[in-house]
Length: 428
View (spheres, rainbow, N blue to C red):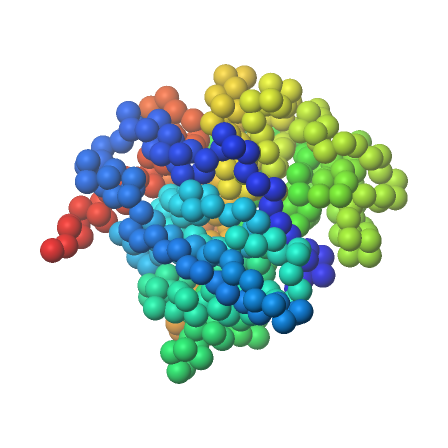
């Protein structure tokens, strides 16, 4: 596992944050701006395939425990399903359905030839050993071996999983099929067909989205500052990317602490500190804050990169940042979205700002099919160009009628899904 970010678990989404219902609500909000057939909308309201599996695993003490696993293929109208695998205690079917639907929208916004999927196992990754994680992963994959595939459904890492889990999934699938299939998953180790630049892609994508939105909104980021909630894979690369573009990151948090320095934290040193101690807490030269204070700091940019519902009706009014970029899926609740929009703040939705990972996953998938691999600089350059094209497309929709970025992104995605759905028709 990554020493900087051992398998992490997400807090349980609040009872009033049902991710599937949140998707359906946003779909309804977008309807006035759509020119889509009723059939397309019904397809989006009804996931293509929902699978629930029992995952028995032998534990280190010799006992056998049973876990519940899920895989939801929300849409395949634009191509094979694509989406991560999450290990989290209390994982629910509605959570997986909502995340799969978000992937459908995300892939369409970025104009990737994928539909949306998501999966996972209801297990706390911090409560199981490496061996137990492997056995759970291999059994879960075996249960899905006829559902997934490089031209059917391509999993990737998500919360609680990493490139090692993807290696186990790839090997289990290949052993069942009788031949090595590197393209069945993305986010793999480089030695097994993974792509350079995949690990940092989600964080870099957030930076590209922020810079692109600021440019198009006429916002001068000179002398601006940022705060980042979360210092895992997404948060640390977002923080490093912002610092690299001359935007000081004054506050960073993780599950064990929150640190602040008015002039800006040294992100490289903070990464080294977390490697050594396991947390950002106690970083030399910084001030300790409580977690909630990070959201209300007088910064220009806020990146919630941990979990769903981090920004909600209870804290949205106190947020001062002009740009809020969702580093985690559904980081801003529906009520908070309304408050921030009313206050003139810009929310860059997850289907845009959080799309760096799936975009480079697409590059990895293409490279696996062709056995031809690009350099890291080529990956970074392609990703930035990809984000610029997506932003141009989203803003073309946004400027056509009064709407926010989330609605514009949804309208763009659904128009593309509508076209492919109608061209394919209904079988039989």
